[in-house]
Figure 1: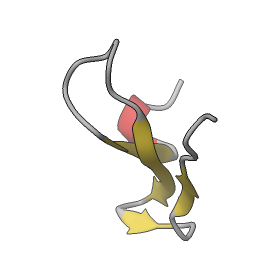
Figure 2: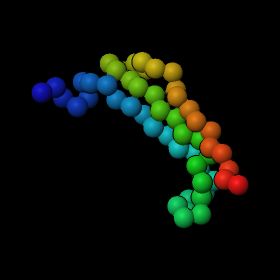
Figure 3: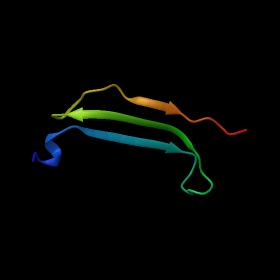
Length: 52
């Protein structure tokens, strides 16, 4: 079995409107894959939408 850091890693980031989980909403979310210390994918992002 390979060490956990020898395979692909995914960085994930959320931007929110605040720190309170019950009151805040996600504005954007992004993920990028890295392997061997190099980014292997362009950041995949999603902009949140406001519920009507």
